[in-house]
Amino acid sequence: MIRRLAIAMAALLVAGCIHFAQGQTSSKARLEAFAKLPDWSGLWEFDIWTDELDGQQMGPQGMQRAKAYAAQMQATFTPAWQAKLDDLKKAAKAADASDVDNPPAFEEFGRFGGCGWTPGFPATMLPGTYEWRITPEETTLISLLGSVRHIYTDGRPHPPKDELWPMSQGDSIGHWEGDTLVVDTVSIRSPVYFPGLARGVGVPFIPMSNELHSVERIRMVNHDQMQIQFTVEDPIALAKPVHVTFNWNRVKDIDRMEQNADDCDSAASERNPIVNGRYETVIKPAPAAPAEAPKPSEPAK
Amino acid sequence: MTQAQTSSKARLEAFAKLPDWSGLWEFDAYIDESVGQELGPEGLRRARAYAVAMQPTFTPEWRLKVDEARKAQAAAEAADPNQPLARLSPCAESPFPATMMPGFYEWRVTPEETTLISSQNNSVRHIYTDGRAHPPADELWPTPMGDSIGHWESDTLVVDTVSMKYPSIFMAAEQASFALSPLSDRLHATERIRMVNHDEMQIELTADDPVALAKPVHITITHERVRDFNRMEDTRDADCDAATDRNPVVNGRFTIIVKPASPTPAEPPK
Image (cartoon, rainbow over all chains, first blue to last red; front, side):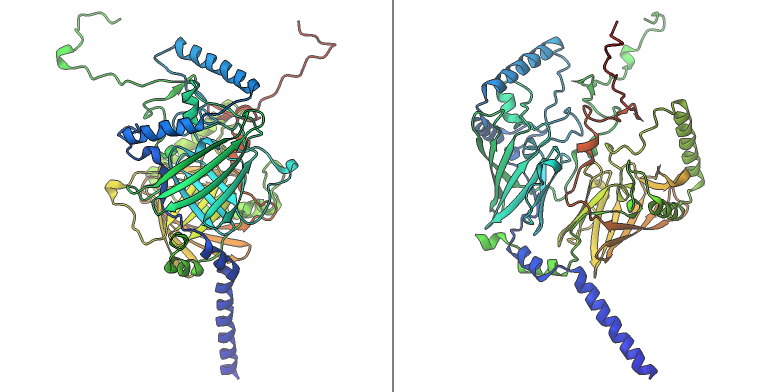
């Protein structure tokens, strides 16, 4: 009797364990959905950094590509928005001229630039290293500049207007068309247009309106290249939608994501801190050489 | 072309063995969170239990440091009680292992990596499960989340974390509130993470620090499935905008902005 009970108990335990383990793993439908998704694992970066020089300067090839992107990005603004940008340009010039040695740290990507800033969408799609995390219900895009885009692919719509609030990365929903992820983004807080164009027209950044709506078609065209086709429309700021295609290349020389903010430290180690809204290069005083030691007899100034 | 883009057979088989931790999770002390992010009665009871479990035994040298830091903090608090110190500002990232407690969490589990994203300042932990080791010492640099590698033991993710910058641990403070206590850069953490049922995740954390801790700290943290929310948020979106933040941090202190009342006709500006 005891033996039978022990066997029954053991069987129940085994069954329970199997059931428990199975309960934790993905459903058959989730596994089938995962099998249809592309494998975008690895790290990626905007292809203007392809021949990046020391000090984060673009190389000749990168510069050529950047110029081509800048031409694509040219936008036609509505007259009212253009007037705003003209005012901004004047203010930027005046701020530059007032203290040429300490350039103003303008709010380039939604918050003040400098160490630790995180660009808002859509500007977040250009600088830095990126990592995709793809599962059936969501695709997540993590940037080394501290932004995380959650693109929900479980069939949900955007929330109703009374439940939407503006966020730096907006609200993104997506669906798969074959190997292409189609993403729709709305409700972006203080959206900032791509900075390449901003520099092209002589202002440090171009704010867009909170009516900005973006559609992306994202696809890995081959093992080492990803293509992002952007359509940005903004009935308040743009006279017509802008279409631009970015290429990202697979990163081959590092295998771990990093965070830009990790290198930000106190003012003690920052060589280019922002003080009162301006970059200030810290030049450490050179140690006094024996040949130029202060003379003991010289009075202190 | 399309086939080449999808996962290899080996990757699909590996994915099939992994648990499904999708959804949002939060520290269970917030189970009955009241308005204003105050803990409710059940949350407070749990927080007190955590506080007891978390008590570290510091080495004598580190104890002195902690005591001095507490004294300085108490003095700073007393100096301006109306503007409390912003020790746990939502605009500041909590470094590991303290990052495992506040905010919402989202796990992104795939064969080569498990990623943990927190709503607290969008902190991201990359836990590599592709069999790699920690980088050699001369290629490691300290980061707030440290360098994490992991492996799966059935449904349990075992994580090993080193190389943390300014590591800190939550520890009990008065009235079961949580305070951050710094640990040394020798901190080594091991976690065993498992979804014990559909709505509960258990994180067994062992923190070993030969410089700061006289003995390792063992603590089990429970995360619960979030049911009333279906989107991740970033605390910076709501709390860190200087224009809209009603309680901005100025010089390390919360400063409540009281907008001046508009002058009434009876009291016109002089």
